[in-house]
Image (tube, rainbow, N blue to C red; front, top):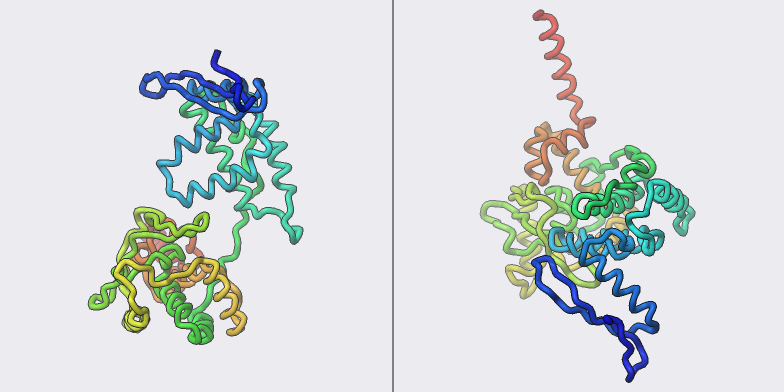
Length: 358
């Protein structure tokens, strides 16, 4: 018998054997169960996980899914996945058998999620609803692809809501310069925003910068890492994509500004972060500067959009811009197509000529 009662503590424990992934026999022990029933239930779930038996609960399969995926994705991505799963998915499906969850169950869950409201009475945004649904669908896809679940009920149910195209808010160069004037009283913030606007970095890329990333003789800035604050720890990861690894040429005025700023940082090492704060600090500073300058409020990421808009207005191609900001050129073309009016006109003119040649 694999379930026993500890005579000293009066509690139950499990001691069972199983075969691991490479065929070796292993022993597992788990203590501290109040009842024999709890111990037997835990043993049954444990053995089902080890045998990849889909009679296991959804909660047990999630443990298996996260174990399978954790070494293949970045820490910040895993943190986001886990947060959504724990708060938006497991409360509804944890104790259900994964093989018995149907599309109708997913639809009922979707209706509950879509009816949720925040403290201001606002529903979840369409993009967040889509993110939540994509996560539960990824779990079922994993079960289908690797553990022989017959179908993905989340895919059958369809996604939540529809993605609405939002107006892309940006600052013009004149609006940014008004904002920058208001930030000069705090050099730490001023120089951070200068890099964001004039180089188009992602915030995580900015916060990972070290003195060793700059070559002031060549006026270049190297992007090869990203910073995240996760569970009260500073975490440095690889950039978002392979395209994100790049070297950016800075304008001369920015090269001089950053050289001056780093010179102000007493005792800083080559591999120390030059902006030793988190994203929330920048959010606060952006609000403060926007209000003082009387310009519209943007998100930090919209500063990146503003940089792309500036380059488009200066006449640079999508390929050149994509190389600078660490995107695929197709992404730049798709996201900012409405900002290339001259190219559209040129295309139409050439089509007129082509039609006339027939």
